[in-house]
Length: 159
Image 1: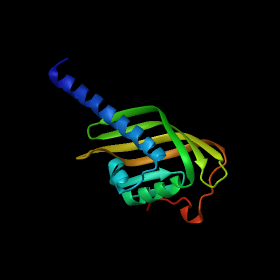
Image 2: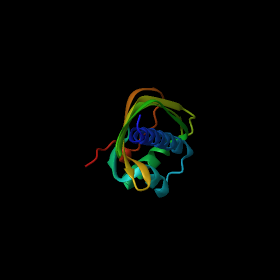
Image 3: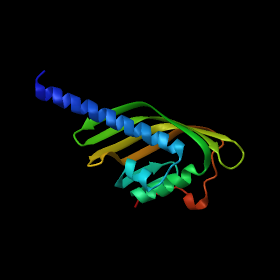
Image 4: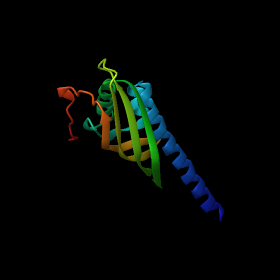
């Protein structure tokens, strides 16, 4: 193996680690519930598109608002990612994986809602590091009591 090939492999491994770390930190941040503008900038591009069970939104501010309101439906959560497959292509990356999310409802019932699905996330390298440019969570199954989604949070689609 020549030096250029070794550098290329080290860069791919470094990028893979950075991307995997970003996804893990993102899911953990949902459970820690510190959802503010700094959070949004740390994880998303300005024009991010996010497809979630509570609708599809475009733009960092819209994602922040939708995630903040969605997470407010729960008192406590645990989000887990598994079987992530990371593909690096220069300054772009794709992560496909599975997500298992456990939620304790915030409606006072202590009801538990579990969802599992598949994720696909597109990331780009920015001057600040890797950021999520597009993400989709497609729920495959649920168990338990789902939260009551307020009418003004009915699923919407990006324009």
